[in-house]
Length: 200
Image (cartoon, rainbow, N blue to C red):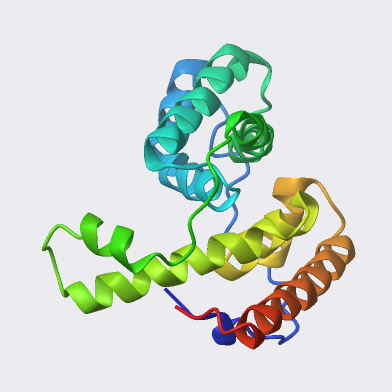
């Protein structure tokens, strides 16, 4: 897990991702859905988590909901655009789940974190990673979803700009503009946190 300071302000390259269009051509709807689930479930799960769906069992439920919707719509999803459909559905599902959530988020609570460490791996490292995740969640929550989605895809999922543009069906220039605004807002929020002494 990278720290807040490691989110750089370098202009992202407009690189063309590996071609995937056409790979779904000729497959039956059920096989397309099966492959999408195999290839993209973890990606969708992580995005839902970073879009504010909590706790983890709710992320599981939200991911299942995304794929249930995809199963109902697979016959009308254009072949090669399954991931874009899943991502857009995940945005909608995340907003629905967040509206239902009323439990306030606890930020960097050492007692709660230590209680959840199960002894696997280095406890200090696990504790530090959990604290960073908690702070990151709060920082991401300050971003409107249109900026948050671009930030998550580029900074956390490490997607190329053109792949993000394809997923969101936006012009690359719009994606770059949103990423700049998201970075500025993220770093401003991080500075305010650090000024108040909120550290992982």
